[in-house]
Figure 1 (cartoon, helix red, strand yellow):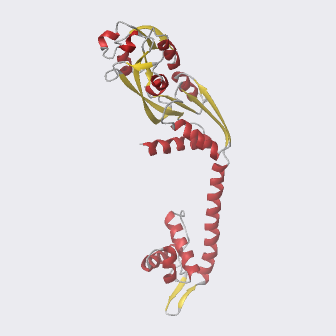
Figure 2 (cartoon, helix red, strand yellow):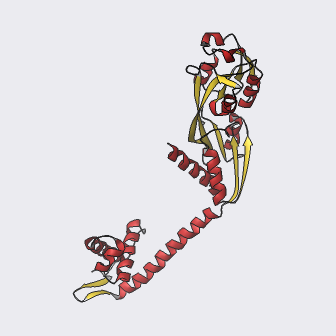
Figure 3 (tube, rainbow, N blue to C red):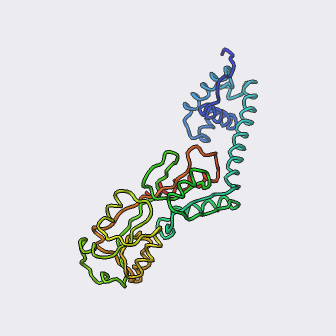
Length: 306
């Protein structure tokens, strides 16, 4: 076999052939390596022949006299052990970085998501804290537009917001959909009216949001007599509980009052809308292992929930 230099990048195929070579040497031959590698003798023979071509010299003698390494083969075996040991050490060291996460995660969350049954945000934070007990988690509760701005200018690493629009400077990871219904309290005259029509609802005072909504969601407020506003969902709930107003709330947020028979949904078949939520992060942000770990966990939890 004509000698040649081992040139070019070391590929995954090369590593596979070297692992086969190591198993063959340590097993004492092709036949014994079949069990160790769980591949056929023919496949082992092909891999060894390919490796010898790649190296440019013979690595071993095989035949009736048995299996033996050439002088070059013995040296390549030693080099192989060094290489594969270094690769394992590299993997261990990289994994240790994840095991010793340090730094901060500054996260912005829209109000009243803690009652969402699909607690992707919470579960991902729990996982992050388990693998990185030294990570400092800082949560800021803010309106969606403030969270978007804070992520864009780097004050926040990640935000959880309604996905009404897509800003060019942000990455979006879909989380879940939130369903909202129109509610009144048990102090409101409509509470006992099981057959209220959409037309009748226009005769009653309603609270409308003073924060951004999609055009589709705004359509649901057009049938209402908006005489009060609130900057968040908790403010909407406060006004509904006065008994003087009706208003939309997320189903999960209103569930506690509904179970206590202090609220009920009005015309739920017709008056409801869905709000998609997403995790946002800044495009082109400086690499951050804490943030990457958290987003990877969120993505895994989301994919498992589908």
